[in-house]
Amino acid sequence: MFERCIGFAWCSGCRIYGSNVVRVPRKHVLVDALASLPADEREWLLRKGAALVDHLDRRGVGQK
Picture 1: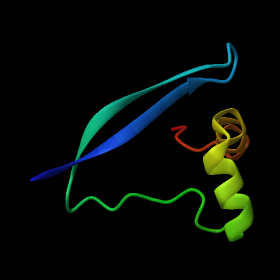
Picture 2 (picture 1 turned 90 degrees about the horizontal axis):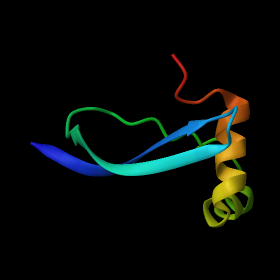
Picture 3 (picture 1 turned 90 degrees about the vertical axis):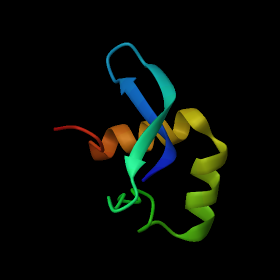
Picture 4 (picture 1 turned 120 degrees about the horizontal axis):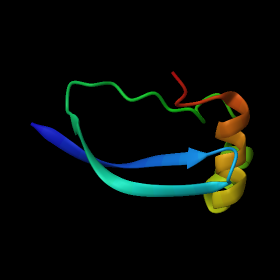
């Protein structure tokens, strides 16, 4: 079975990002890229879309 999740993709160069609903196998463990942050910083980033993308971009999250 699958779970529905929101998947994000962005381009650091053109500063455009988009999202889509994706299906992830239930047995697949998703990494929480914000888990190591203090609760107040995490909540602030979750309220600010552009700041969240900037934070993830600086960390290189999602790059292969």
